[in-house]
Length: 362
Image 1 (cartoon, rainbow, N blue to C red):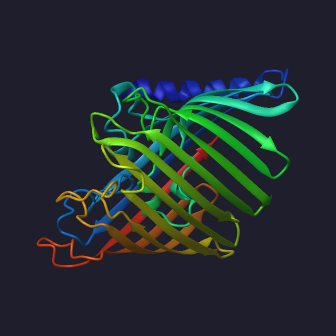
Image 2 (image 1 turned 90 degrees about the horizontal axis):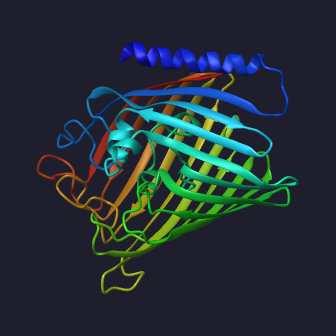
């Protein structure tokens, strides 16, 4: 198995080198990128034995683990583009548990075409990254290492088709059809979809607005019906001396014999980071997540048994060269009721993570 994997990697690099040596007939390009995110986490709650049950990213407790490791293959030309990103490690074990075997390790797998020669209108289809919230799976791109509650309770990936339409130089509009809320295999054969708008007033600001609607009934949630979700976030100068981001969203879940807006949830978070000339970074994030009817928060002995959660995060980072990042992070959780501890004797808990991310691009 190890020899086979080594041969595959060598073949991919040879393919890239061969691509570079061929005469260029058009503007097509092929790239390969690798990423590994390793960490050690320690949670103060003794009931979180080997994993923190209310997270899917970087949730191993009192052990060294790898959150995500992937190889990304990307192709683009004037009218065709595609991306294939197989991935491994604990994030996939936690986040893809309901998917069938052949899809359990697909971070991205999509292809796209430009519909008109003179207009940048693209149609992409396949397994695509989610547009929701200001954080994704790739921790190096964000102010803090651990993901906010906001990102943990929306889709990380979506299976579907998306149409991208530019409007002027500052706006990009999207319309999409999905199989459902974070599901590659459609569980109920009922439609789901979303709309999205990106506004870039300049090269330092990104404002994103999006919405989702779909019937979420399945064998896992037979009492669910329509789900509606709206999300807004702002990113500021994410690679600059000062960086900032903020996100707010609201969702509502219709149940059998109930109207929408009877079971809803919302969250709000904001983060800021300062980076020195010596590549040290200091980040802070504060967030609040409310889910009174436990639509998303796992209200059980294996979860939080709470309807809301407040969290503060402090992050210290050091970049090495241009492709490695070490971070030490401390995080505090505060619940309105006593849900932490062996006998649920405390309303607060703490989480400390030491992480190392390394990435390569060819």
